[in-house]
Image (cartoon, rainbow, N blue to C red):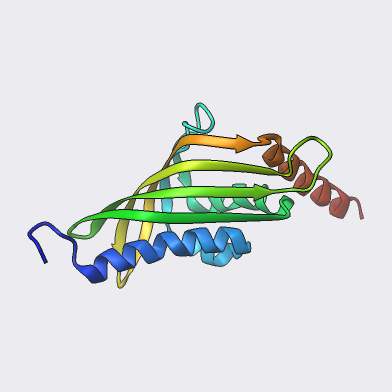
Length: 165
């Protein structure tokens, strides 16, 4: 191992946390999704939506995902080419993401894809790593962006219908 290279166990632990993040959101496993975060997260999704920056409670972030992703027919977040730097009990990772979002609809293409990378900060929590900062840098996209709006509308309609009964 060269000087400055992360311990392979730490590097694997950091990567596994990001893989659990992607798998949990795609499988709509909200307990697993919540488990990858610290109680508060510094977020920067401004490259996708202007002004989407700040510190949020992890429970609120999970609630935002619950208000969108169940409205999709499917999603798939593929992560690759991780570069990890570990300093004590903190780690930084840059990892490419290609996020596919699918929803059959009458308003255009059934898919919307985001490409770019996450630049995340993690902290050691016992033997696990937790995400304390998440930055999405979108470098390209293709397809029907309204798929995400339609998915959120679908979730809202289901909630409204269940509260009317």
